[in-house]
Length: 203
Image 1 (cartoon, helix red, strand yellow):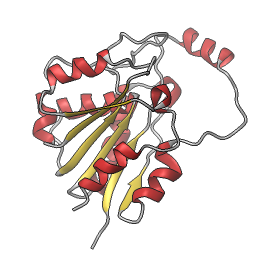
Image 2 (cartoon, one colour):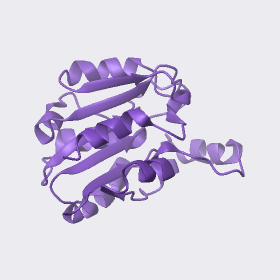
Image 3 (cartoon, one colour):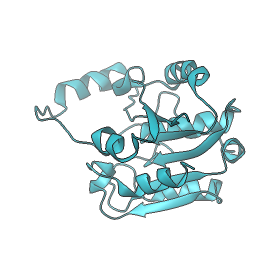
């Protein structure tokens, strides 16, 4: 029996112009130690025996453009099987939200899991531009997949809880999980809440 596929779309950043992007490169904090994130070893150890985890490196993640991501994402679709689980983190979350709200997905999706996706350009200290703007009607997401989960952190200064409430108004049938120990923007090495949801959809 084939393993269930998980396609994970990572986060990224967007900038209004090249000057802002270059300023970011000149001033971003540089750290030499490796960061342990939940979507790396932890996810593989937790569900890797049951799932094939696909993690494409999306184009120009630090200066992302929606149309670039859309092209690269669609190149993966022919390789996906029915029953795939889609996970999007941060910018990857709003990418999936926009894509699935505007396109009929050609494969059956088992579940869509969106981790701290911004809803609009009301972020503190960051600009959500580059085409990552949701349209008014998100109902096609629910037609593409009935099992939709949002994960937000109660102490996330990057994507605050108000974004969860905005999604809830648009997608009332989705499940929302509010985490209290996610170190802000889910900068954690373990994420048992999402593993629980994934395992519930492996049957």
